[in-house]
Length: 294
Image (cartoon, rainbow, N blue to C red; front, side, top):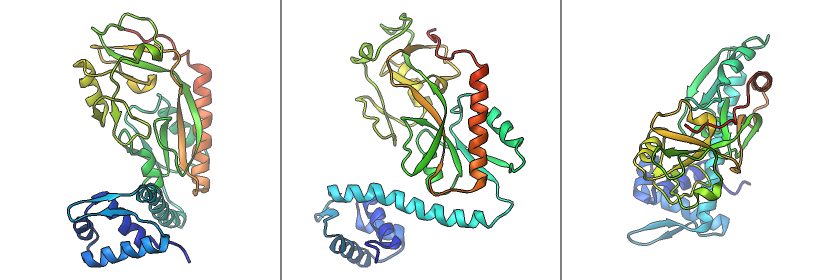
């Protein structure tokens, strides 16, 4: 017998996200006593305490934090499996690709053209995701494939193929002390304030939490922070900012990603076309790692 049923995992995730049994019960449309009883039953079966409860406060234990992390992925996998079964029965299914606007390394049109030329090609629906949620689109079945950036996007539960490797640039206001430099090293940026990207694993800079590029640009122009990003993610350049290569920054990889559970020929064909298109583009394109200071 499984340690957890899907319904119980849904109950736990709701409480863990709300940190309030009343709000979680309302969200789940069940009675609060029934929800509390279900959580106690889960704790008893697992032999761990998931929540610290007081009369005024509910918080996660370390075991609860671990279950929340893995539980979200498990629920995504269940949802994706159900949607995958439905799509597999549909001989006219379209392929759904999620991308970040401007986050395709200028490869998207070539990839779509290469895929369209294959005899088994289907129509491709382009979905636009935010800075941090595109991998979730694939994990929960809203999309079949995604263009993601490593190491910024979480690839848990996904397979991937690398399409493009590129350097990273520091984004600075024009009046910054380093703005006249032709290239930088990470040590040059140690005194600087870097942001925290909401929802990005490992993003732990001391600066403000941001969610999108518009917030980033505004705060850099105000002198509140600087940022280091893959070069292709900062095009087009903003005229009031300077973009300087950071020569020892960890390279970024643009990848095409799909669920590890998805073995459909529809997805495999698209991945093959994407890899072929990116290889052709690399053979023709000049070195994009050249200086971008301006």
